[in-house]
Image (tube, rainbow over all chains, first blue to last red; front, side, top):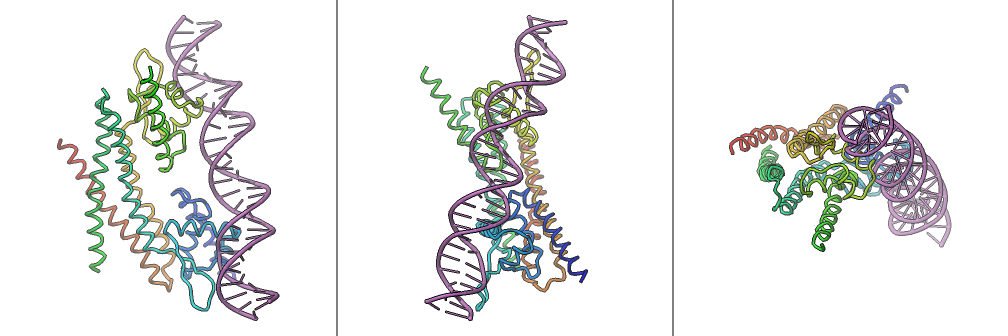
Length: 160
Length: 160
DNA sequence: TTTTTGGTTCTTTATTTGCAGAACCAAAAA
DNA sequence: TTTTTGGTTCTGCAAATAAAGAACCAAAAA
């Protein structure tokens, strides 16, 4: 069956390509590949062995990658009664939540720079401080808007 | 002069603490410390030797850290005629630009997921695809709003 | 009760990364 | 022209990280 192995090759290539994208986003190689695989796989839930098999990796690497992705809130698993295996999958909802919490994280840089400005309050270099203040203001501006956007988004989602 | 060395100790402690924050944000240790130092130093522009001296690090480590921060658009340098040295400093303006470009970067995940959805168009698992679509929509929503926010921010800044 | 299965954890190894120190280099100063 | 200065680049080395493989473990199956 040339088509099937063709398809598998295509999948493997896509997984590698997308894996590199996720590496750039801060994941290690194996978690990146596992995430890519779970996004592309049909069905979109896969058991431990099939993930391992597809990625040609060790059990420990897969186990650690899956646990990492679960801690990040991107992956979880489902089970079927009468079947011991866990079926791992991308959980869009909790992934979205973790994206949102990253957006909220904007405030931490603001807090740090506010702290810096406090340290610099006697500085003669007013331009420099003003530059930092602008960054603080920008973050405050964004943080304020984010709340409104979240509300708007939830309304939009509820409305359809 | 107990106060002066006290101040230096305080500065060093702050630099370490803030350095760890920047590490968590993705910088390596030395760039993180250099950035912290340049934020806290008085004056806010410092030459190569004083950075090296304060951080007790090698020339190569400082050189690489500074080049890294300059590529990131966080740091640049000024010069004074009749003085060979470069005075490195945090450039708030280009830092703000690089923050903005990070915000714009939201679209790359959207593009990747759009690609995934294209791959999955024949899938029977409609719920899964819908979950991914929601993430795509969220990113589209945010990307659209970001433009408006940028305009609003620029108006606000221009207006004062 | 023993065996199998679906993973996890521990140990070892290979790769990558971060940094020091030395060699180096171009421009300025002497 | 030689020397000094302000860095950069190269050469290791040490520490951190990623992954393999084996040992292990609990729950389910036989």
